[in-house]
Length: 177
Image 1 (cartoon, rainbow, N blue to C red):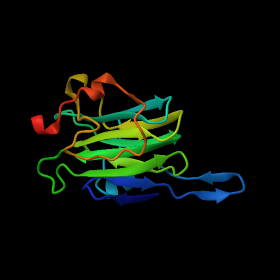
Image 2 (image 1 turned 120 degrees about the vertical axis):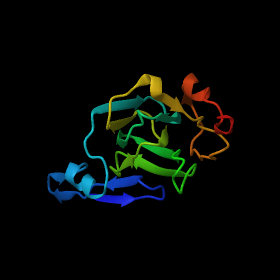
Image 3 (image 1 turned 90 degrees about the horizontal axis):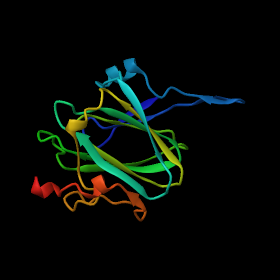
Image 4 (image 1 turned 135 degrees about the horizontal axis):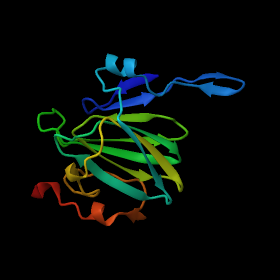
């Protein structure tokens, strides 16, 4: 597998290296030891699945406040998503900057998202499913978010928004925090 750091420190794209034969292929998608070699958390406490019926669905931008901030490994197992992150770490050289990538069942890439980054996505196909590996148990009282279209971040979404939760619509502007 190839572990490639992106523009935001600690944010990594994880790409499998398939070993193919007439049956198909086999590829590692996670290795605790290799993650540790890159300074990454490699042990995850829980897994979650997000299933989305309709293309254009937006979920996010979600994060958990300290001391319950979560590190996630996100992979699209069916369909495709436009994935977005915002760096909310005040001491980071990329504070309030964004990164956006496409994850799909076809490219089989994963995104390693360290604690302190807000995360969200838009589905690019109907019937899209995302697998989350999370380093610690979820604490509902620490859950927070940014509005998906907050002008402070100028995130670009490739599709018209078809579905979004009322909670995600209600997050305040970052400037008001």
